[in-house]
Length: 506
Image (cartoon, rainbow, N blue to C red; front, side, top):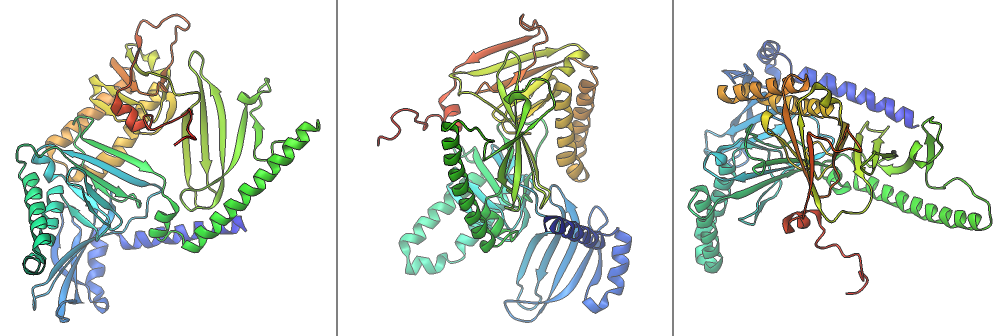
């Protein structure tokens, strides 16, 4: 039954791909079809965007005066949204206008959260792509915009639109609710001060949270680490229901199955304990091990398999886990999850052991091509900078990775080139594009071993590592310094609220 579902899913994906190919055809074919599709009401306007995509229009019903207006459609591609449909409606009778952005690309495997620190007037003009599932929050203003229609806008546009909406009913409030009227007037004045960048207002933090993964905030290469960040996260069952990926009944049924599985696992644990006490040892009832074929038979050389739940489709799947010991460091856990139902894949690297009392700063000067072959473990809490390459990775970027220095640099290059440069190069300013090309050229030289550079890694949990090829002797090109964590770092890691002793007491 599972194989049949998998085959059906492949067929549906193939049909969906054919549909997308039909929808997003070359400009010439699209324009030609628009000429002949008079039965659908589509007409060519003669206008095009910068990429040559034609603007089409169709008669539509105005929802305000119920007369006939005109909707203009543009099928185009913009950063991180891939294929989208821009729609603009106008009514010549009552003057009503409306514009929307509808995503034509598929929902991503994970949700996404973007953060932008607005520190000057230029930051207010950054491009923002907001899908109809996206929540926008201005932290310092304590304002949250719930999911609405999709938009291609700027941070200034979001605040200006908010002011317009607040002003809409102010004349009525002034008479009926004078206290509410004054509070809203104070809020509008406060927002306007931030838009005008008055002294004492900035910085302002903008956060986009989109479970569909189809929103975006423009990134400027070479900017400080604290200004922009992007974090991907697995969706919750409620978010999957919101996106229409699964139904509430399927979630309830799956939660019931999980509850039964936990009860069955608990019962097997009790039976297993009784068997051990009686002297009969059996295989662990919860997991099974797959030996990796090495000569030494111990836990380090076995792959543990556990039952899990797919974060993409909420179907049952398996998670494989292997414990690996890094010499002169500590044990790390490599985890891999693959869902046969939807094809979702996830790889993680976690460090084992207790939380150390101090953080660690690791500095390595790579002056030989052989240094690129060193093993490197970058945890999720680790930030990494390479000044010579203008590379600055915030904690959480790329997740946990256990690879070589060459492999890590290659992954950074592939991610930036595919997710940022390729999607935005057509709309980049010439000087910005030149900076990106210089950055990739320098990164390629470092990957090929033609340039010298310094890796700086700061990990507040001391969970990152670079191989010492001179071990157990010290490495002349590497320094490792322990430092006390700051209060802010402990807050971000949740350590200040953690209670390990007398936790049962109030």
